[in-house]
Every structure is written in C-alpha cells, then in structure tokens.
Image 1 (spheres, rainbow, N blue to C red):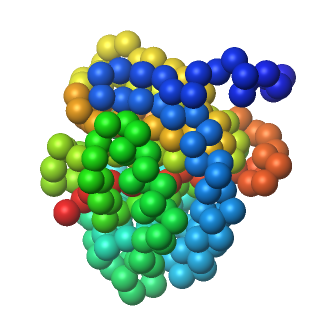
Image 2 (image 1 turned 180 degrees about the vertical axis):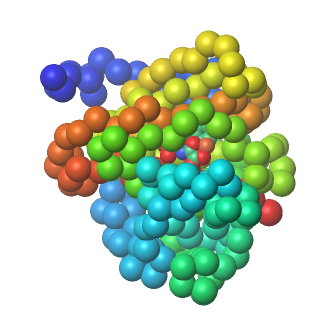
Length: 214
Ligand code: MD3
Ligand code: FE
C-alpha cells in the first residue's frame, strides 16, 4: 500500500554511495513542461525496442533527444547523431530537460553539466534492465543524471564488478539520481516493473537519462 506520509518522512536528499545522490521529488515542479517536451520528442522519434548485439529484443522501449542518441543493434552499442528509424537527427534537447538536468547536477555537486545526450527509457509492466555499466561515453569524468517519471521502480546498484553485493532502492515519480565520481562506473539495473496505474502517466515508467557522450 502507498505510504501517504512518505513526503513527510522521506529525506529530500539521500547519499547512496560516494558520488551518488538521490534527490526526491525534484522533477515535480517541471512535470508539465517535461511531459509536453516528451510528447514532442516521441512524435519526432518514436519509442522502439532495440536489439542487443546478442540478438535479444530489449523489454525497455527507447528513444533519444540531443546531439547524440544511444543506439543498440546487432553490430553493437554506440552513440549516433542519426535516429536509424527516421534517418534524421534525433530531436533537439528541450530547454526544460537541460535546465532540470543542470540544476540536479549542481545540487549533486557537479557544476557546469552540459549533457549532449538524453536516453529516454519506457518501461511497461514486466520490462526490466539487467545489470550493466554505462561505458559508451568518452569521458567518465562527467556524471549521469536520471529522472524517474510514472510508476515506481526498484533500482539495483552494485560495485565495479558484475558479481558481488547489489543494493536496492525504490524510485518514484519525480525522483532524480545523480551518479558521478566513483559511482559513475558502478553496475546498475532496474527490476521488472510491477503493474500499476500512475495518475498522470498511466501503466508505465519513463526514465530520462542525461549524459555527456561526446
Ligand atoms: C548507476 N537506465 O539507461 S537510470 C540506462 O531507470 C539505465 O532506465 C536505468 O541504466 C533506468 O543506462 C537506470 C540510473 C542510473 C544511470 C546511470 C548509472 C544508474 C547508474 C551509472 C552508474 C551507476
Ligand atoms: Fe545504465
């Protein structure tokens, strides 16, 4: 059952590990702007299920905005300035996305964050992301900022090796996580999404993941 008192009893800011901080509900003031911008992005570059280099269809549907978009296909993972589905550049990064990502990075202690890539992940009930590292970017000195929207999810994060202990925590609509420093290369994933209905987002979770890819 939902905890009605969560906004009163949950800290606004939680340190998850060295370099990683969870900022509760920080995207809520941007909700309307984010959702309008998101609609425009997916109208230009729709969600699609990419295929892993091993040939598996990902359960998470993805799209991108910004100068570079994360792409997976039989030939590998990479950042590409062109959306392979439309043959056109990915939609530009909306101002509201940039402003929020930068404010969150600032609050996490990372000044001057200028992401050129935003990977947008859509989880429907049952969709999951298995444990992985984000290592397709050129410079791991830049943090990653993650904005959660819609249904709650369980984040998993481990260490710098695939094996070993994994910690779990719930992320809710409007929560932001900033991953930098020694947390930047931690293994992480998302457990299978539990079914539910979110009052503004319906039966889905959307995650915006801001990176410096260049
Ligand atoms: C921990 N997305 O797109 S964001 C991804 O919720 C990805 O859609 C997840 O992992 C999602 O690659 C999780 C949280 C996240 C992002 C980057 C990290 C956690 C991280 C980098 C290092 C450690
Ligand atoms: Fe990741």
